Image 1: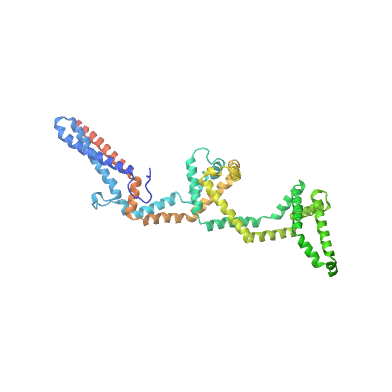
Image 2 (image 1 turned 45 degrees about the vertical axis):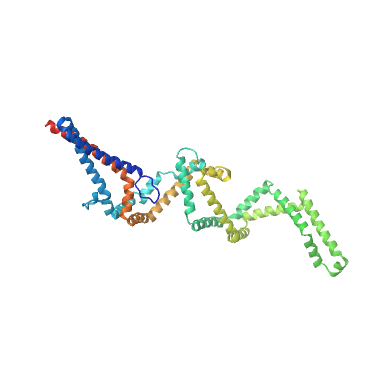
Amino acid sequence: MKIFTRVPGSDAPPPALVRMRLVATGLLVLMASLFLVARALQPAHPGFGFLRAFAEAAMVGGLADWFAVTALFRHPLGLPIPHTALVPRNKDRIGDTLAAFLRSNFLLPGIVARRMRRIDVAGSVGRWLADPQGGGGGRLRLGAGRLAGDMLEALDQERLGGMAKSTIAQRLRSLDIAPLVGQALDAAIAKDRHVPLLNGIVRWAGRTLEANEHLVRQMVHERAGSIMRWTGLDETLANKIIDGLDQMLAEMAVDPGHPLRGKAEEGLRQLAFDLQYDADMQARVDRLKLEIIDNPAMQRWIDGLWEQARQALIRIARDPEAGRDGRLAEALKALGSTLQTDARLRTTINRFFRRAAVGIVADYGDGIVRLVSETIRSWDADTITRRLENAVGRDLQYIRVNGTLVGGLVGLVLHAIDLAI
């Protein structure tokens, strides 16, 4: 059954319904005209008797079906005939019956679970992520994507964002970061990947010393005795200290085997070991991690991270072309391929969606049923009558046409039988 598209908020009959109503009424008028002509010409030739019988029976069939179709939505000719205007008179019962039908046939956990078992949600998502434009159903995917984007924008961002940010923070809190950092540092040292870090530290120390020479001179001057300050030895000592530090940093920068670099590497190895195996070090790192997570700056970073992810999801959902390039697109395509090839992951995700759907039905099924029933009850009789008539009226007009033609054929058969007898 086709539901006709109308302008939102308008209850005017669709053009197709108006056309079919004119066709059915015009056919009834044609049968009446044929009946009058055939009745006038019947004495001239017996064949006009068949035409009269056809037209007469067609009028009866057409009028009967017109009465039946009209009686669904209003009183025929405005007469308060019993058992007419069925829809407006039984509006509340129709709403309750429709709600009960939905509850008993669609919103039972067992029914939803059985139907969800036949739906490969993870596979469909995987195919779409791997190739958003490929295969059939491009318009359906685009419409679904835009719907998903609208839903992401329409959802309560405070609540949704709070859930997402709470999940991120919870995962960070539960992450045992010290062993991971220790293993990464161990692997970096084993492959000399720490050397650029040491070089960077040495260069940074050199620039820092050059920019803060005045502080070194001030510290030596404040700690020197009055005799050293009077003789100027404090300035000489400060210059020696600065020159010595500068020379040491220069040697460390050019000599990979410098003893201090060796001490630094030894310290890094010890740090990597402690991060992996020392409980006290792991506890200190964990406390530092928690302090960083609770820091307002970190919370603002998580807020920005969630908002960037949400905006990226909205852009990709509404315009799959926008997400076809870049690292994010590559990651999504890789995820899509994984969802298609990894049977265990696909089963786990499908099971999650199935349980989520069943849980929603179990928790909110009665609420959905009440919503349907109460919504229909809130409509006035004229509104529901117009909407139902606009939705199914065209098919009902076909019933009038069929009733007219079938009635005429029955009239022909009866007329032939009458002549034969």
